[in-house]
Amino acid sequence: MPEKYEITVKPKAQYLPDHSDPGKKQFVFGYTIEIRNTGTVTAQLISRHWVITDGDGDTHEVNGEGVIGEQPILAPGQSFEYQSGSQLSTEVGTMHGSYQMLAQDGTQFEAPIPRFTLSTPRTLH
Image (cartoon, rainbow, N blue to C red):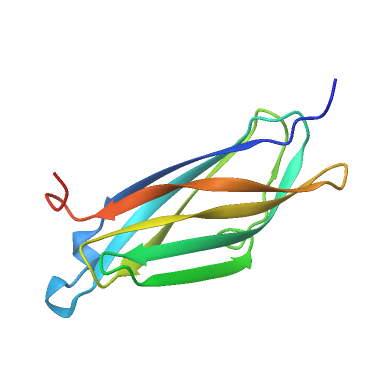
């Protein structure tokens, strides 16, 4: 049976009013990411690439090693969850990207991070 290199990523975001200052166009969002190895090969998260777009269409890209200072190793069926945040100058925006993974057998592959919305309450209908 061929090996299956597959990581499922589930993001969930929320607005953080206590850390935001709308008068200064500072909107802070927290997000939780669940990364689950839905493949058949143990794999390690090596790096990340985020594309963050605000409500004006301005895009900012972020690249870096691991997530929150970690490079988790996930056996098939295992998951890793972490929390982080982002700040925008608009009330709404989106994030998406990918994690670069290294399988136990040396195969490198990408795990896509689906686009998700960052929005203050009652901004989107």
